[in-house]
Length: 169
Image 1 (cartoon, rainbow, N blue to C red):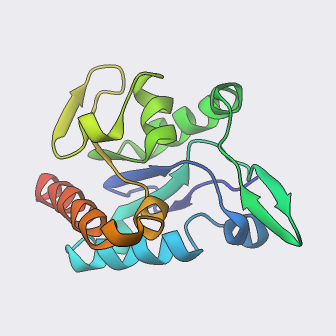
Image 2 (image 1 turned 90 degrees about the horizontal axis):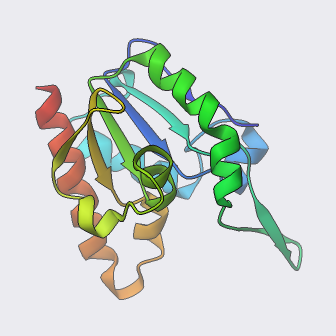
């Protein structure tokens, strides 16, 4: 299990999909390549690490073997639901000013199965069910896997995290 990490007084709660292989091995969220990108972009746009709490919708690394490597496998809806309690406890404990949903699994965990990042990203959403403004954006791993569109996807992540910084003032 990999639970969230950050200050109980964090102003923004960032939710990813699930821990990756590096996170699973270290027991900490967002310490692998996607986490390095997320922290770099957050710093670039002026978000301070002390204002961020990092967690995932699913608290375990779901994987399949490929040779000697453990390859990420998308969590099932039942796995998302099984971890929902822990995510809601983190949200209630932190009480952030902004909730940032990184990728489809995080967006669906909070907004429902029909949530789509491409339709929801780029603005601040008022979501009465969570009683906190929500920003939906790409998961940094999607940026890393974007190939020829990597620069474009990174710019979208930068733009969305800039919205978060602006919302925080």
